[in-house]
Amino acid sequence: MQMKMTGILVGLLAIAAAFCRAGETNFDAQAAYKAEEWKNAAFSRDTAGLAQQAQAERNLAIAQALRGNQANDKNQNRGAIFVKAGDAERAAGELHGLAIANYEKATENWTRAAGEYRKLTATDKALKALQNAASAKANAKEACRKAAEAFELSADAYSEENGNRLDQMGLVSERAATFRERLAIWP
Image 1 (cartoon, one colour):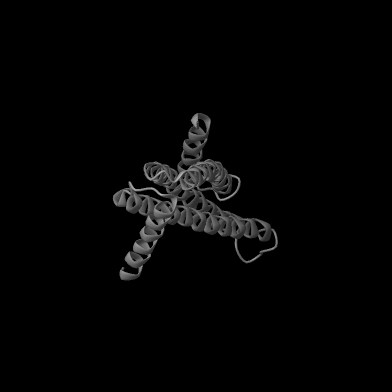
Image 2: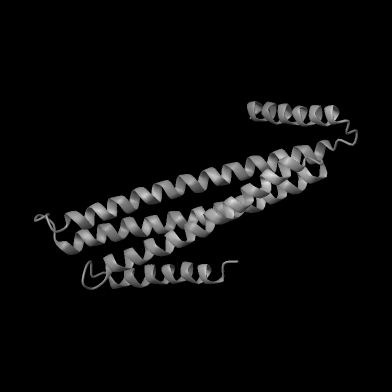
């Protein structure tokens, strides 16, 4: 905790020094503090979203391998393998859904950081924060598309022809529809 506070103070001092060099006398320490906190929070949200998506992609690779190996595996029945693939795909969809939430919060946090940077007349930092907000928003939309696709794959794996888990098929089909509906109204 002390290390983080030291980092924040160093950041504030750097911003204050930049203002002094620019001849700015109206330095708002609270705005500088808030800008750094919003920036750090946004960065953490972006990192969380990226990690969740990376794990989701691993889950999808496992599911694909299971689907590919089901024809060669004589020890397990075909349905059980599809259920395992469906479980991995469902988990991938859930992880992409979590990533969406993190990217949406990152978008809000980058936008708030930009507002605080504008108060400091740090237009270059404000512009960078707004660019990061746009990137986070695009990442959220992409995660939404991937979540829908993962749930659709899971529904196929649970279908009567494959895993024969119609209860699970219904649940993941509903989740897929939820993400498709979000995509349809995405701004």
